[in-house]
Amino acid sequence: MMRVLVVEDEHHLAEGLRFNIEAEGFEVSVRETGEEALADFAAGERYDLLVLDVMLPGIDGFEVIRSLREQRHFLPTLMLTARGRAEDVVKGIAAGADDYLAKPFDLGVLIARIKGLLRRREWIGESAGEPEMRVEINGRTIDFKSLSIEWEGEKQPLTLMEANFLKYLVDHEGEAVSRADLLDKVWQVHGDTDTRAIDNFVVRLRKYIETDPAQPRCLLTVRGVGYRLERG
Ligand code: CA
Image (cartoon, rainbow, N blue to C red):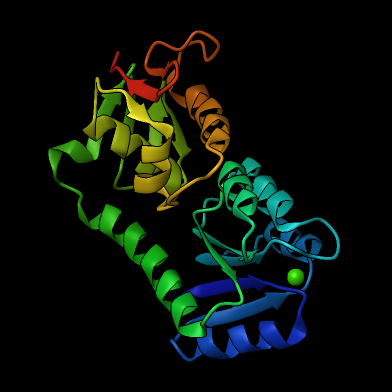
């Protein structure tokens, strides 16, 4: 059974989430603070998906996801943000979240998002065998099936969004791709949004694919536009 961790301090909402997610056949654990959630992972608990509120009593949701990603936990993560806080979406993306939902939300929509995240992960897995599911960049092999990047015998997992981001650039190799386009196509964030989150994201990816991340040769900045991928 798929295991979902819900991190939400509002008791009624947390129990509503538990009830509805369980009704879809998932096993659900609820934690009220980020600290408790991180302690779970530190104790070796494994979950298939994380539903993470931004506003929590101790460390906030951004801190939780940043910390999990740093500790190389790559589970798909849906962040619950406050309505109208576009900057929360951008901060969530920068911290490593995969999707977001503004409060208050319809529980049916939440379930659809959860299934969507799991389906996107499966879709990437099922597309295996197509030659473009493994690509070489600068001597690194990116495997879109297992969501990983491998070089010099070292295998580094990628988050769903890191993989989607690289896939989009690979599909548009040699073209300048705008930040707004990346937000739109990779994260489905539409409209007027601060695009700086993308830059933090790229800093992280350059550590994986560049020989010298300070002197990028593959994931290039195109001044005033966005980014361009050149396979080394
Ligand atoms: Ca809250």
